[in-house]
Image 1 (cartoon, protein in one colour):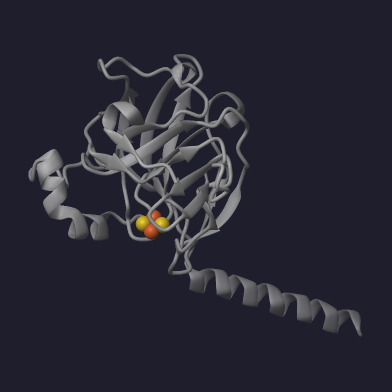
Image 2: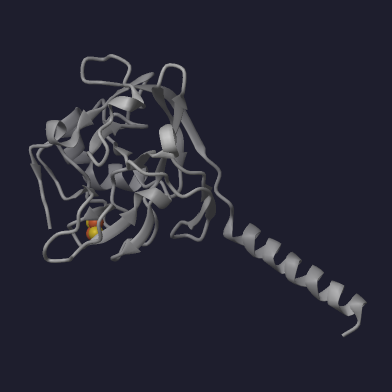
Length: 234
Ligand code: FES
């Protein structure tokens, strides 16, 4: 093959890849209010206070949309390329804090939107596999239909029927004060469908005026066991 033909072929395939990326649509972060994460007494939460492997819940970017805050206790993967159900591409940069081990995700399952309520939760992070072997360790597992997500890799789907990763919550960590802020989301948000499907239940749990209300400048972080009476294990 002539050198000129070879260069022409490379240029054509690069153009095709670029056209495909544009067609897929690259997702950029969606910024919301910058909210400081606090403990249950309203004091600024310190990243060092997060126990590795424990499930923490806060609500963001709306008063009724639950999110997981996790200290994975190990470094996360950097620059993970992910794709939403509709084919939009995006890149998750990794966790924050020491070892980049702290991550945040929407706790609304990407399959049929099972989510932690004050009464019960079918979805949670699990460090250990179960005796039945239905799940891998160190995953966010939804017991509704066994979708499984990798919190160390942007919420990527590892198993089950979920058609896209969990939407990531963008966190900022201040190394000086050890404070954490939530600033936005990245990935396939499902908030409109979530409000439409659970409007009645959300109004009971949070109040109809609060359901779609944006979080202001603070979001309270609780352990999942404090927020929710019963955690389903599968
Ligand atoms: S709702 Fe989570 S797997 Fe179906």
